[in-house]
Length: 330
Ligand code: HPA
Ligand code: ZN
Image (tube, rainbow, N blue to C red; front, side, top):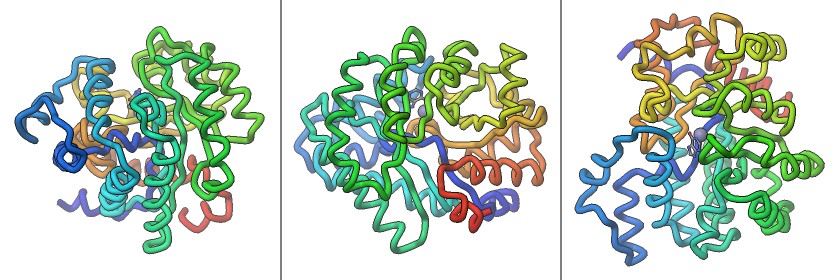
């Protein structure tokens, strides 16, 4: 309880969070009812019991199925508000939130609806509480380069309208077999457009995907990156350049990236001097929001209060806020 309060009290940012991954089973049932949709599970408990994953793909299948209950602007708003309430309770002062428009446009939901519902919640919470947030529009790597370009073209007319929130681009979904170079040209275009760039790499994929995310996609942060340790030269580079790694311990456990939290390399990465942060990824599916990720990791790896403070501080240092706003939080 004491450590819990200490963690909540640490000023922190959450930098690796998929908004569709915050959809709790209760809200999935509520939205399905509201939208007159059937769910192939008899109860909230039965749905939650299905969250027994063996790898990334086994999770993605349920994650995309769960997201299919999101239809209206209000649905996206309600989901986002629920996350922001949880984040606030965990002492998050700033959140950089990924969303997957292709998961919705592929089902006939307009991209305008997705932007509008999420942004309305972010703006309301910012005005009411001062908690700031940015959006990272993520491309699904199991889809084609052309589909990513089509998504960017559909979103760009909205850029001006949402320039207070939409600041960056991400890359997620099935990593193996969908290497960074598949998205070299779309990321080059997004860089020209002066978006901030991040990509998932080194979650299930090899360390070479991390190097390529840096060299080919020119990203500023690596989402996950835990497999970077397989390449000592890459590790030296990540430490030298202080490339932020947005690590998600409970996600790695639930997706069997590690067999036990006690075996997670987060502490080793941190103690080597890497710019490590702790995040929740898809908290509704992985059993804990960001505070729980800090707590479980601290207990499993014996992190000191000072190390927890470093991790929280790293999250603020690694965020995309302008320097003056960052300074206020640090
Ligand atoms: N990895 C890849 N894609 C994702 C993830 C993840 O952890 N969460 C949501 N989409
Ligand atoms: Zn992720």
